[in-house]
Image (cartoon, rainbow, N blue to C red; front, side):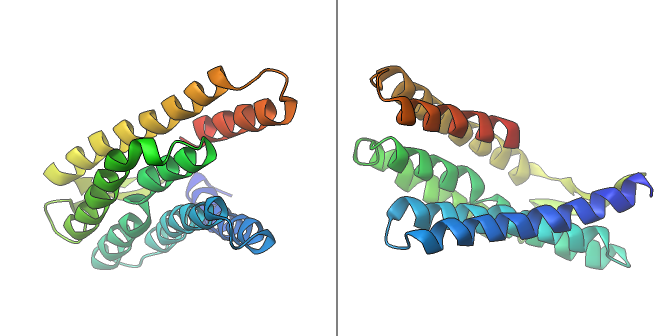
Length: 185
């Protein structure tokens, strides 16, 4: 099995796993806002992975560009959903309302821009697969992405620092959350 085949099918399996874990968590307590945001986060990551699978399976350049643009239907929402999840988890959503609103605004803006040639266009072809060429607005999106991932990690870190060390379960939850999102990124 070559590297391209592994890459193709790992995207498919990972995408299906993300959908499954998102639904599993949501179904257990569907009225909890944290579970709702986590479900949408998982859907965003699954969209990225499943569309990547389709992109790798594309038969021509036009189809590959279409599927890579579809990747961004999920990717542009990952940082804000991650941040929103962190705010709910740390009970700091109200204190960070403006950053949250701006994050959703920019996510929707990048969603619209991702449909254009000013975001991605043309293809780079590698031995492991292919990818579209990032354009001007994609570079701005990366800045947005890293800012909101940093804000998420910072909120989790602050919460960890102020959490009473006697609350063993909460400390473990924060550690696992922090580690899982570091690994994902």
